[in-house]
Image (cartoon, rainbow, N blue to C red; front, top):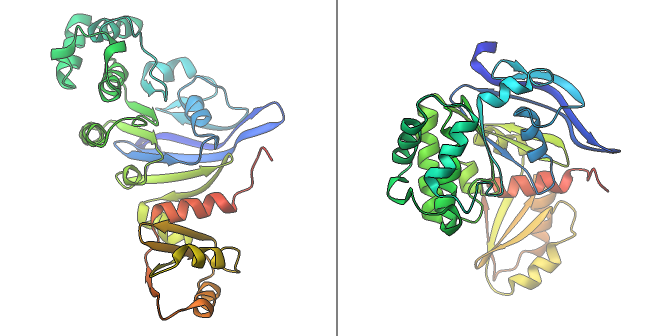
Length: 308
């Protein structure tokens, strides 16, 4: 992979607010046409990192490029070629869909603005609602408007910060179908999400907690790298069993899933010994593959809180 294949190529990116380091020496490489999932708990530094990539914040340390432009010195150029969708809907609720898109097109000095707005409306299925006020839209339609606004100046990189929070499953699925279509056309996407099913739809993932990058790679690589052992137990009196297991050596997680418990730990031998000590003929134990949620909670539990 050459440098020209990388849309994002940063090393040691750091940001401090006062005496708190909120992004701590994060390095990330994202290839052209890739959908890269950026995951982590609330307050982990994801949004701050994205804002440094798109030129809204200046890093306090580190080096690198976004779209070939220096993240420290060429922020104005980066902004012209990036589409950034924030967590909070940030368009004018007293303007129509068409008026919002026209306003954004003006800001970016998009050539043949009226035609560009119409293409955007048609491309995301907004044409029939073009005169509806943004404030009257449901969460899913606001999401479409926000994506259309991000795309109207034909960016080379999309930075999407929890874009599907608060929308229904159908709208989420349609949104992801659109993201995959765009990526197939060569657009690069860095997306933050808390939904594990969405994380599994990304080409690669990175996990950040308390400002530190803890894991990255494909889903299979992240799961394998965690070396987490997980068992499923079913049977009666599971709440009492959960209480008994929590706090035992080798047991990191005990989580209820419907009529079962998922019991996980990094030390497979110690975990197996604990399970053997509490086995009961009434319960059925089955070892299973750890899921992304199991892995990410484990990573979070072992990370050090930078605000503690």
